[in-house]
Image (cartoon, rainbow, N blue to C red; front, top):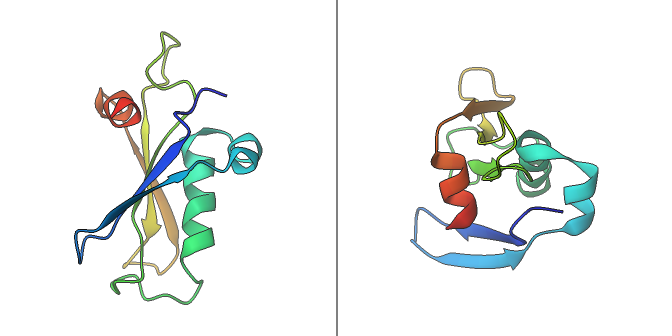
Length: 104
């Protein structure tokens, strides 16, 4: 598995941060930044959470091949709850941000 093995949680309200170990089982079951990001999101945000409440999360997740020479793997997945629809959404961005976050 080519993840870095850690998840950083940052509370934007208080500025507090904590690091936890990556759940290896989840990393194998939900391959890639999109799948793993959705898993961490749904584990931490109850289904009826208001998208504009402090209980909503924004999950930034990279994939296992990010930062390698494999083509098209430097994506960053962003998962949250949409204020427009009230459902989970995922968006991806390219460039160097995915590998930079992975190696930070």
